[in-house]
Length: 332
Ligand code: SAM
Ligand code: SF4
Image 1 (cartoon, rainbow, N blue to C red):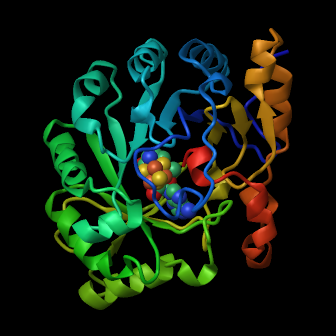
Image 2 (image 1 turned 45 degrees about the vertical axis):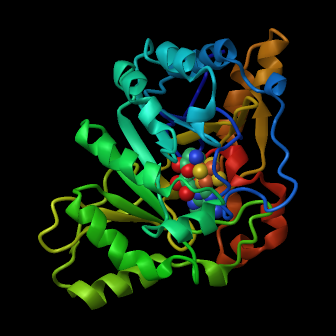
């Protein structure tokens, strides 16, 4: 049997996002459960050999882009072994990181060709950074972002906006990163297990654009063409050299061209960020069995839109989110 990464909606999946760990050196309130976060014991996680072997099957079936995420991928002690192993495969390597320890890993990332980085930063205010993340790493993170840019990494900064927390920073973040020539992307706050999501806390794409148009004028703000398999709608401020984007997974999802599958650090395959349906590939792998039938079945079961949550009513149902993992355990 051959691994088939095409689903019943004619979407081919060539992009695998691998979560390396559910541990993290920050504690972002929208990502990690507020109480009783249970980290996965190391023995239940894919070790580097297992991760590379399972990944190889996907690459043979057509995956040509891999993004490492977490938790915080750079807290994995064997990150060097993993990156060096993945660098042997015919894939484009990328990473999503909070950049707290990026300065210690620049050389490794350059050597292994993992030079596309999405870096998370939700505020330009040191005190607020602490309030959001419960850690005091603002200066180091900002310095690492600027250093990554200087060293020629292809970077984007990701910002989750939450009402009453950082929605007053839309314009200051845009101005700062446009000046630094670093593309910024706002992410709509999404619901996951125990992250106290509420529609009223989410800042929608429409609300973000309202602020931008009020400041710069709608006619002067360019709307760019949507790229293949895009997750964000892209815009450009007058005279800016780089674009900014909005990932509107809540109000306007991009499911139609989704090419992504997700592998969690404990070796479970997910066909959608919002799906609680998982295939335990690590269990099969450890039992010496083939993973192919389980992968094919999960890909075939992928819903057309957000794990079947087509309407706003279904999406807002809190019982549904409680059945999924928290974001820190999926890997965004
Ligand atoms: N630790 C890394 C980081 O922060 O970039 C990688 C993992 S983190 C889960 C990946 C991305 O998911 C980050 O950009 C983070 O802001 C985003 N994220 C986490 N929880 C979210 C939520 N509830 N809604 C929207 N985005 C979220
Ligand atoms: Fe950690 Fe990233 Fe989640 Fe923040 S968003 S808690 S940095 S995994």
